[in-house]
View 1 (cartoon, rainbow, N blue to C red):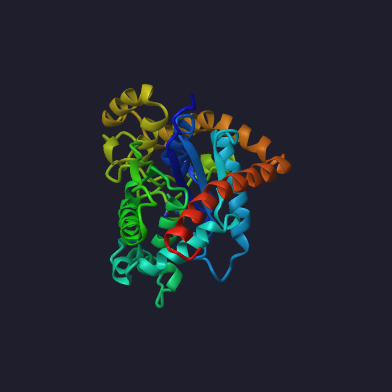
View 2: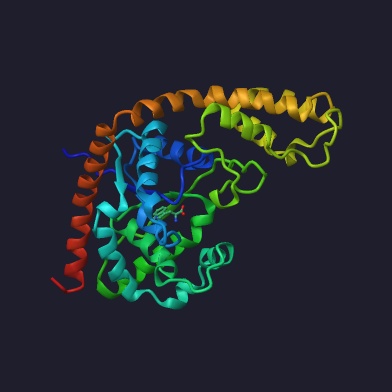
Length: 329
Ligand code: TRP
C-alpha cells in the first residue's frame, strides 16, 4: 500500500543581504528539524529582494548563492529538501499575476510591513511591486499548495492575507488551495548586538560568514545593561543582550553567570570574552561545513538545479489545476 503523502511545507528567506545568526537560530535550525517529517521546499526569494533593491541588483545573485551555502551548512539535506531559488521557478511569478487580479488594493494598503518599509527606507513613491510584496509571498506558498508555513511572528499578517487570498480564489474558481497554517517559531529570537531586533537595516548583526576575529570584535562592542557602569556594579541580566546570547548558547552556565553579574562579581568585559569563546566553539562546526561547501561550487550548482527541477514538478501540477479552474485552458 502506498504511504500517505507527507504534508508540504514552504518557507523562505529574502536574499537582500547575507544571512545572520538570527536567521540560523530562528529559522534554519527549525527547518532542519522539520525536513524528515514534511516534504520541504526551502525558498531563497530573490524576486522579493527586488521590491527594495532595484537600482543596484548586482549583489542579489551572490547573496542567493551565499544563502544556499548557509542552508546546506545548517544541515538542510538536498536529498530530502528542495532548495528553491524563486527566480528559477517561473510558476511563482505566473501565479502571482493571477492572484494579483483578485486581491483588492485596500487589503494590501493595510499590511503593517508596507507602512514600516516605506518609513524605514524613506520610500516617497512606493512601487507597485512593493505594495504587491504579500501577493508574491502568497503565490510562493500557494503554488506548492503548502499545508504548513514556519515563520516568525512578524510574518503572521502576511500568512493571514495568504489565507484570505486562497479563500477568495477558491470561492471564485473552485477548491484548489488548502489554507496554509503558520507554524510559529518558538525559539526566543536572538537580539541584535544593540539589543534591538537583529536586522541588516540596523547594522547590528553577526553574519554567518563572519570570521572568528570579527565575531570577537563584535561581541566586544555589544551593548550591555545600561546601568552597570563599573565592573563591580550589580547588573540586570534580563536587560542585557550578552546574557540573552549566553542563555541561548550555554544554558548550563547561565545561572551561575546571572548570580555573578547580579552580585557585581562579573564585569561586562570579562563576560563578553567568555561569550565570544562560547560562540566560537558553538559555531566552529557550522563554519567548517560552510567552508567545505563553499569550496565545492559544482555541488552548489547541482543542488540548486535539482531544487528547481523538483519545484518545477510540484508547481506545474498546481498551475495546471489553476489554469483549468480559471477556464483559460
Ligand atoms: N516575507 C518573508 C520574510 O521577510 C520571506 C518570504 C517570502 C516567505 N515568501 C515567503 C516566508 C513564503 C515564508 C513563505 O521573512
